Image (cartoon, rainbow, N blue to C red; front, side, top):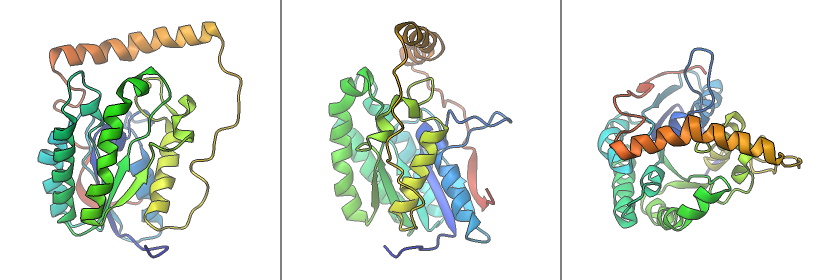
Length: 256
């Protein structure tokens, strides 16, 4: 791809990873990698427009059915799709079906005519990653085939060593923190042909691991504030995104 290619509009679709949870702003909203990327693109493109249709908790079928058609109709010259991880983290999952719906979503977005970007989501070191790794890798292996069919760019965050570091993840252990989102924005920035500003996958400085008491305190807080509510939603068939609208449903001017 031509270096320093210019993008004048950007649409992001997906789930909480793209909505940008965990990096909270004073007004109670969230700023994630897509927002950071949009701000950087807007700085060099007067009249830049941005939409973010991603909603937390969405499964790939919901992303395909609810977000991709409207996103394609916007005709943006840059479109990102990240999804399927909520599906593979569920107790029961037919990964082949998830792959098929992901391909449907990509095909719809590709018809919009913009540069399509797909991503392998990052994985945090720990037991959750190890338990669901086979499903994740089955889904991620399918991305290259989808990308080849639609001329998409693939950003491989899953292979990142830095993004596996727990220090780049929020307290809920499911979403990146501010530094994690900043690194993802840089990774996408480079993948779409723009001049690198830093090594987004550089390892964090070494540090002594927290002691036993600090780890147990963090585990108890995580269980109380995040794990128990998450299990409750799974048992009752609810989602954190039920009834929640997209934060930027229209392709409007954006100055960052």
